[in-house]
Length: 54
Image (tube, rainbow, N blue to C red; front, side, top):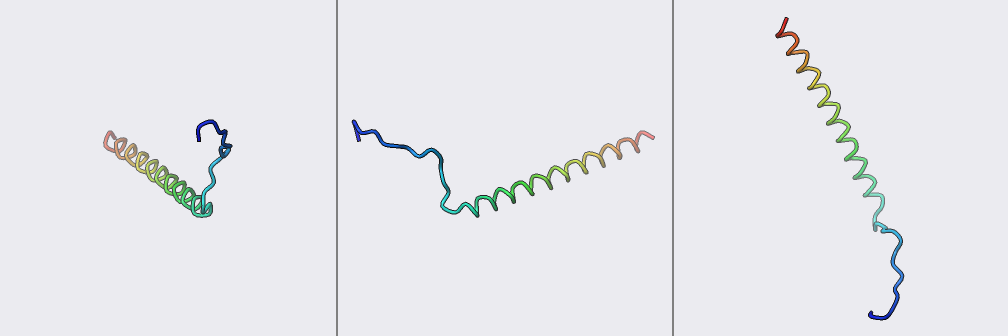
């Protein structure tokens, strides 16, 4: 292809966009649940340490 200009795609397209969005949604839900669980754990540990000090 030397000497020929070839037009490149401006963006990538997925063959199955529905599954990509579904997977991203599942990852987002998992990350949100993980952050909530981490926050609950951190608050419970702080409460435990405070109760030990009293």
